[in-house]
Length: 373
Image (cartoon, rainbow, N blue to C red; front, side, top):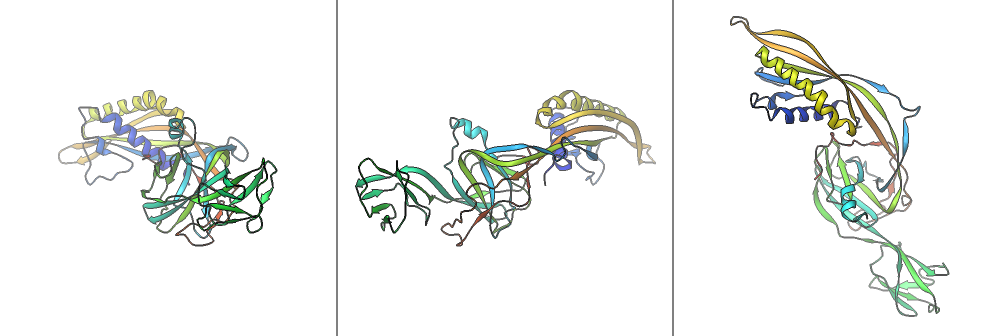
């Protein structure tokens, strides 16, 4: 589960501190010594260690319910598979904006198979809704795609009568030609709704703690640390935004301790002062709209630690204490409308059926995943 607690916050703070100190000419080596733990073989000349203290939950509502999320996309399990390789999916707002406000990927079910711990392929099963059948004669029509097995629904327009395969029509050997048992009456037309198999794509990279938006345009798939070869899941793409998740959330008060170490007392004080001012005056304003509110930065006292007793050489230490209020949220998927339909793809086992996630899967807005590629 991904809350804005230790891992995400520490990774973000370490990154921000490294970016800040990278431009300082007096401390060129400090960047490598800004870490989340003491992992030095020998104590460096100077360094910054970011550690977590404690966290207290702030309840915003009785059951933490925030609201219902509408989305073009949703994540679904494939029956018989754990489906835990992908932590969550979301819309790629930039891709939608670049496509004129329209979702850039056709609606359908996109089956994803992990062919390696960090590699996957995508097999799409695409939706065609209310396609006007091209009638070559009163008894013969042509579809634009080959319907997937048992997915075709023919409806007479405007009467709304559902045609039954084998009784009202048959499908030719080419898979796209429709032969009617009775000629279509004047003024009537046929509307077809069906699914067809799209072209598989891959292999795509799926490194842990990363998000990817190229495999299915308009969809950001975020992989955690549970990717495993052979796992399968499905990404559902709808033609319109629908209720996709129930969102639960709240806040945490998180305490962060930052240790400043240096061999020179003047360097230690300068690093402590500049770090405190950066955290309070600069970083606070940059991250407050991202769910991270730095509510307090306090400076502790100084201590000395013997480095070489014979040479009267010391390490000089001080501690900064931060209080950060962070958001957390959980997405509980709703059962999409197509989950009752058993789907099978070429190359996938028969009876591959979708189902909703019984347990919540978790999302984060940034930080836990350092890059979208």
